[in-house]
Length: 171
Image (tube, rainbow, N blue to C red; front, top):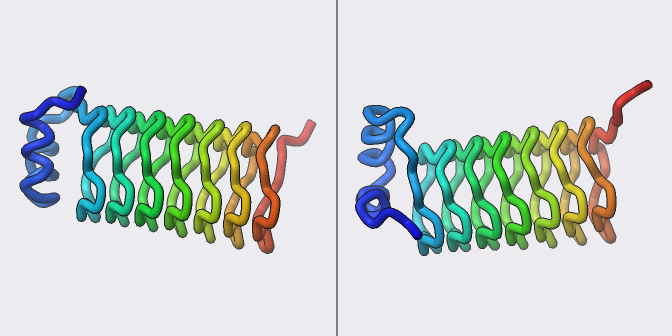
């Protein structure tokens, strides 16, 4: 359950939140199960934040720092995550249907069993990401870097993988 004082502070705006975060490094942030749908969080610092089960559908998270964040079963459908940093984020079973992730960094992220139907992942960095069982049906991966990504049981039906880098480990 989200810490109400932290959630209230976030709702006061990105600038105030980011200033508070910079003066409280290392503080555990719990925004689990929070309703942040349609919120304007562009450029927000949510690195290593617990957002487990949160609703971020249609939220603007462009340029946000979500590195190492826990977004397990979070709803990010139709969210704008363009140019966001989601490296090492946990997106296990997350809903990213129709999300805009173009030019996002998802290196080493856990996207196993995530729903990415019709998501825009153009020019995204998915190096060493775990996409085991993820549903990327009709997703755009044009120019995405999937070097060393785990793609076992990944659904890629009707996906655009034109110009995507799909290099695996060499023996």
